[in-house]
Length: 227
Image (cartoon, rainbow, N blue to C red; front, side, top):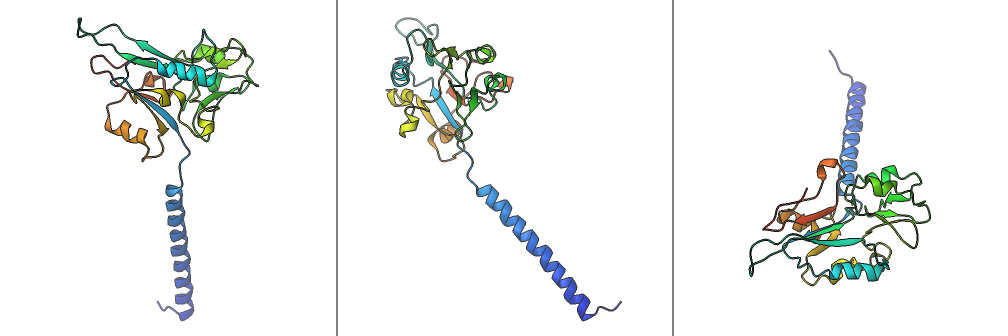
């Protein structure tokens, strides 16, 4: 079979087009891989470092103007481990988990409960909330409440409107005297929280529900991780 010069040039041109297309696709794939992921804020509570001083609770209340009788954050003390004078307690942080698959968001009839796409923070828009309490009923972590003055759903939002808006860390993190709290972007492999989660034994609660919580705990050495 003979191959004319015209056929050869035509074939070579087709190969060049295919090669160019493949190179362009490779470059596009590389660009997508290098594209920065959106921020996904998370918090780590080190139960081994926590002393139960509740400074975090006070700072949260003061910074976010949380009324008495309700709380965005609680530090729960366990029963004592050991015997006097060698008694130890486990301190557990109970607050919003900022779930990536938040049931409170999916049940909200008005769109008041939402996930901030730029940070991953779960928050409530008080202008849209009608106080129906669907989100409170469905939250498996029992961390939402109706604000006694605003009459709308409220909870921890990582100080999104206060400290974060001012370029600072959440109030609880800044006030912790033992540095038991770490806050940052999990999608940044160089962030302190991302490194700690890789280095330390950690757990999250009720992950079997598929909520994908973003509150991590370093377990208390004398206790058992909570589910």
